Length: 423
Image 1 (cartoon, rainbow, N blue to C red):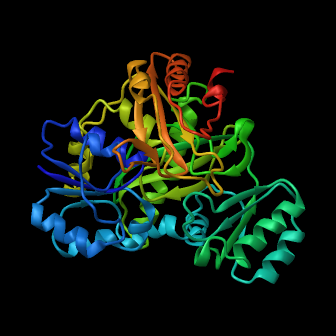
Image 2: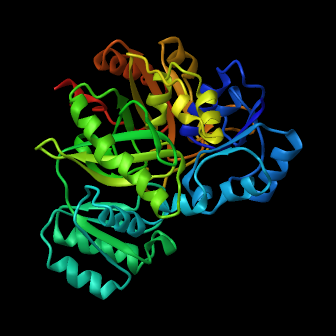
Image 3: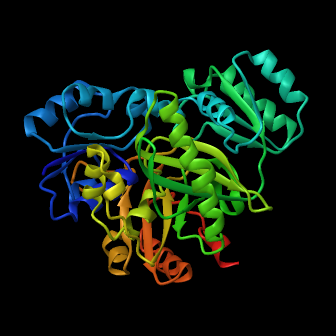
């Protein structure tokens, strides 16, 4: 069957790459895609927020499945639009995507159903929020309520930093209306962990666990980004802890969404913190594949991704074969100089063939074709270089060796991706 994937980043490149391997896949379309996605898919020049155009294209091409990548169209109800036209679509409806679209909704849901998370308060008034903030110890976490491209969270280690973050969100509106409400929550220490799950109502099929690196600089320093690198599996985190997170957090959350009349179907992404006592707590839920978690999770999937998507859509997820490789995967993100603040675009990229020859998978996040057809930068996160190996150390060596072949002006990368797993 022909498939339409919606999105334009590294996550969507990994999804298209994985779907294209299925013997049941016909043409894989991607709207709007990027230069790298164009190597495995047929690009469609329609933007992710042009719902009617996307639906018309799906009808015209008689696609058998639509897969939605990014958070914004999910939060805005793109799945409801496709379902109204009887087009099979993998992703949560608008009322279920609200678990990512509103952090206050998510926190209140977890509190109501006694699901482990950090203590918090929510505010829609700046002065009240500031007064509360001044009474709390630091470090402390300030979150814009709505979507902010993964950058709406500040972990403040000083009072000045906390107050500055609150002002930038609520007064300066750096994230627009996403900052009309804020969540102020306790700082959790420990190891972060991401568990993505295929979900259909109360049926939860977890994927291999991964760990992201959010801060822009080595040692988890600097501002939050959309993610500077990931790895999977997590050899330093016990299977019992992963199992506890699934049983005490992810499955109860899926049940809670059903109980609230918001049944979730798609990928439910749990961002978790494992405290020093080994107990997992919820940092966040996202309503879609993570980026760059997808780039290390899908290369470890031995089963047919298209079969899994169709099973979720058809209500047979419990019967789907989902098998994972024992291989390790490490993704190193190559970012534009200046990211996550302002950065240039249109800079030539060299060395991709050498990187692939060194054995890496290269997923394009922010790339385009220049006027003469050359590959150029077109985003903050430009490429995700993924190494595979028997161990995290092997995969990490391959990722960094391959990343070293790639050059563009201002290229920035962290040098400590997956280092926590080697201690």
